[in-house]
Image (cartoon, rainbow, N blue to C red):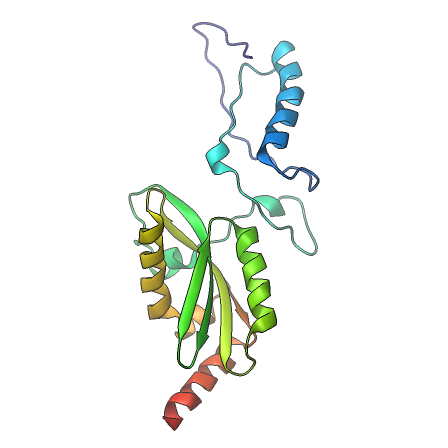
Length: 194
């Protein structure tokens, strides 16, 4: 349904909406929005509308939510450490959950933050205390990159940066169970004993 006037200028305002927590899927959300917006079209307030379903994401509210919190987007750490890393391309953000130990390193990446949070919370419950550091961070990649290309790009970055002070001390990286300084001291002491 639309109410577009021929040969007339119209204003287009991109809008982000956060749905109530009881709305669990995109179909329910768009059905409800269609019902609500249809009346505005009939009453000549809206000329037309469109949903950008590629931009749908799931976000976790803060423990003390404030207005606008659901729209805050974290800065992907690779764009801070390497500002030109995704220059001149359309990008998307993926979420990375990794773990570092004295002998190995691993990670998984996720399309949405909630899946990454769930994985990070699982890792935190099973981490061998004293031997492993878990982390979670946002990472920006080319929107058209294949899953293999995303994995390779995250891998290159993570294996280079995971033990650096710049990475571990960044407010853009959640770490568990050690503070950045404590983890780097543990790694240094372990390396000295080799």
